[in-house]
Amino acid sequence: MARTSHHMQFWRHPDLPWLEARLTRDARAVRYARHSHDTLSLGVVLEGQSHYESCHDRREHVMPVSKGSVVAMNPGEVHACNPRDDTPWSYLMLYIDPQWLATRQRGGQGGFQPLARRVSRDPTLYQALSALAIRLFDSDGSQAPGEIEPVIGRALDVLGTVPPIEINESAATARAAAFIREHCLSPVSLEQVARVAGCSRFTLIRGFRRDYGITPHAFLIDCRIRCGQRALKRGENIAETALVCRFADQAHFQRTFKRVTAATPEQYRRSTSAPWPAHWPPAVPPSLD
Image 1 (spheres, rainbow, N blue to C red):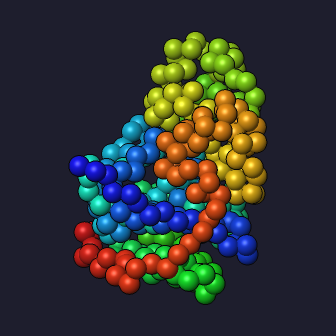
Image 2 (tube, rainbow, N blue to C red):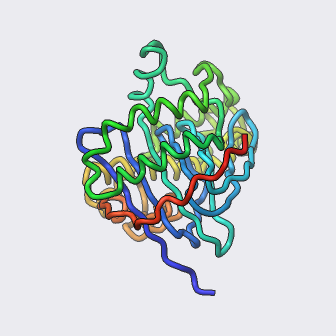
């Protein structure tokens, strides 16, 4: 059966540098590799079913999600969420700068507090986020900014927070991850990272699979893609970004970028939007809580 092409839009506002939104509709063929974000990410499933895979608390979690689900990913959490084969899959994502968010949590005292819950079926939150999506992607979205903070506040109330002091990685993988993040735009070998971590290569790989759900190499690629995203948001040239982020060429960068983000670098950089069809979003389902 032929795959149906999907419609993807990104939204940004010059007065809201701490926020990015993404809308994907009828994404039957979308497939994400496991990846992470620098941001707090809130997802709203508008159509379809999936299993949300997330690695936190030093183990992997798999949770069913469907129309009406609100999904949360804390910054740096490795995850993936792909549709069932040949079924409609539509969703909204909000990517929120954790440093900005930290100033709204507990009166700005301390750093960002991670969210406690990863999946919610709260109908009020779902409806608020869906309505916000319409405002963002309908017309030019100029009337939406004033509505964003109250909706994010509602999400924090529903999903709850945990203290930021909890460390889920082992000491070795934490050292290795910090080294990779700092040196991801330089040549990095597994042997070099293992020396920094103070363990063997095999122990390091096992530790990364346990703590992050991916290998050290996949973690490195994920860091490079995130650097590429930041460059593209600044309007940097795609070919130059590919080389700065240590990909062999633009084609290599494009293939890897699409595998991780399900969008091409050009789609991401354009950040255009168009009006929603009149029937969106689908009706709000009853709460399952």
